[in-house]
Length: 183
Image (cartoon, rainbow, N blue to C red; front, side):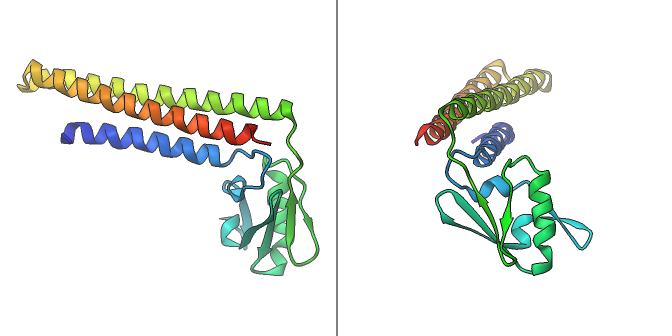
């Protein structure tokens, strides 16, 4: 691949990876440890990712269990979960914290699918913005003694990349929507 196209390819790829990570944090009825990815726990005065202060497991389809490395962290972990947007009240037995996910209603599933589609559209817009930046950069090459044919070829290749990543975004949206609607 042309090195001029390489940077735009990697930007589009990062957009898709970011979107996939966003989708991982959306809960769809089943317990998914990734809903905790953004939560930070106060660990001796330092905001630390929850995954680094305990062992996170999914013992049942609708339950996440957090076993802190130190028992003294239970209160801090509970406080961090309560302050987050997970929307689930943690319960603890002195050793582990449990998050029990309620069954998602049909109404809520439809709302989640709308959110997924909206994020998908935002991802497509980001990919198209990268294409626009690329085309602008290629037009500037005309001043640097690059032939019109070469610029046209670069623009065509960039369009192919754009199409590829738009399809990737559509695929991610489709998979997540299907996952959410599966009861």
